[in-house]
Structure formats: C-alpha cells, structure tokens
Amino acid sequence: MTRGIYITGTDTEIGKTVVAAGIAGALKKSGIDIGVMKPFMSGAKREDPHSDAAMLKSLAEDTNCIEQINPYQFDEAVTPLLAAEMNSIDISLDKLLSHWNEISLTHDFFIVEGAGGLMAPMGSDYHNGHIAREMGFPLIIVARPGLGTVNHTLLTIEKARTMGIEVLGIIINGVQFGERTLAEQTNRKLIERFTDVSVLGEIPWLEKLEKKTIIEAVENNVSLNSLTGLGVKA
Ligand SMILES: Nc1ncnc2c1ncn2[C@@H]1O[C@H](COP(=O)(O)OP(=O)(O)O)[C@@H](O)[C@H]1O
Ligand SMILES: [Mg+2]
Image (tube, rainbow, N blue to C red):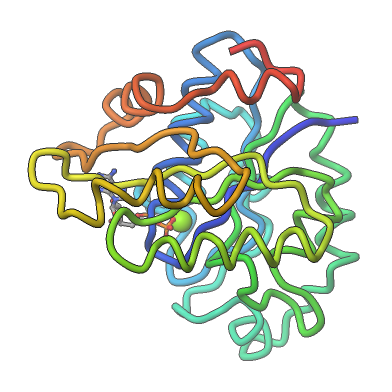
C-alpha cells in the first residue's frame, strides 16, 4: 500500500504549503521516491509558479503532471464546495478517490496538502478529515506560533481522533526567533503538556522563500525521524 502523510493546519494561510513542500523536498533529497498531491486548490491557477500545486511539484521534483497533482482547481477564492457548486462540477469523494487510486502507484510515498483546516468543507458531505481517513494517511498539523494556537491545535487533534485518524505530529511554522512573545516561547511545551502528540519542530519565518531555503529550514528544524515508522528512512 502507498504510504504518505496528509498535511492539515489549524487554519488556512498557516504555512501548510511551505511545510508540505519543504518536507517533500527534504525527503526527496534523502533519496525517497516522493509524490505530492493537492486534491483541491481554489483562488489560484495551476500555472502560477507560486500556487500550492506548483510549489509542491517544484520542491518535490515530482514528474507527475500538474493535473495529476491537483485534479480540482477553481479560480474563486472560496471553499472547494462552493466553488464546485458555482461551476457545476461534481467533486464527490468517490470521484476524488478514484483519481487518487490512479496516481497512488506512481510513487512510494506521498505528501498530500489539504485545502484549509481539518473540517473545511470539500464536497457536500465530506471535509478534509474524510479524505485523510479514506487515503489512510496520518496527519501532520501545521500551527501558528502565537497566542491561541494551543486551543486550535488541541481542537484539531481531538477532532482527528474522534474520526479515527492518527496524528503524527505538529509543526509550528513562521517563528520569529529573535522577537518571540512569551506565548511564542512557551506554546510548544504547553501543547505537549496537554497532548501526547509531539511537536516535530518549529520552522522560522524565512526572509527568502526559495526552494533551497525552505528545504533547509525543514531539514534543520524538523525531526523527520518520526516518519521512519511509515517506512521512510530520513
Ligand atoms: N516560514 C515562513 N516564512 C516566511 N513566509 C512564510 C512561511 N510560512 C508561510 N509563509 C507565507 O505565508 C503565506 C501562507 O503560507 P502557505 O504555506 O501558503 O499557507 P497555507 O498553505 O496554510 O494556506 C504565504 O504567503 C507564504 O509565503
Ligand atoms: Mg496551501
């Protein structure tokens, strides 16, 4: 069975793409046959080099075509459910999973980036959590560094577990190490006091968001050893 992880976040615009693409690039560099997937993308064109799908493809050096990586693209910056309804497009979970079945054999290990947070609606009767569960992939939760993140992170873990989805770890993204507030300095420990899920690392705020700097930020700050249980030697 194809292995992989599903990257979700405590919110949108939290750094899921930066983290997912960085992990994909780091694993690729360590010699793993990595594929990426962005099932739904709204508010961006696939051809835009800064779009989620294009960034994932570029950092992972995935040879799959962009339509395989991102089967559903919408121009409107709204949740996939609304965008699909506005464009009369069928985005049933069955259709998405049959697409997934086709591409799942193209690589050994997949990094999948969901759209929005865990319960962001995708189709009319499912959200991100259902996709992760059907794919059988554990979650990595990307969280922001500041005040409020403990609550959002614990809520996301709680919901995942209610759905029977394994949570592999948390990554705090965008830390401005030189000028951390008291909350930012203490959030990692506070999260770990209230859950048995580990914080795998804290990624700094990067002045230059380039392929090399993103991959190095993941290599230097995230414990990728936790993926060894998934069959990855990193
Ligand atoms: N560690 C970081 N350093 C600098 N900019 C970042 C970092 N993480 C995210 N960003 C920026 O923040 C915005 C949101 O990040 P993104 O990865 O697209 O979030 P999401 O995928 O959760 O919507 C983007 O403009 C991205 O370039
Ligand atoms: Mg994204």
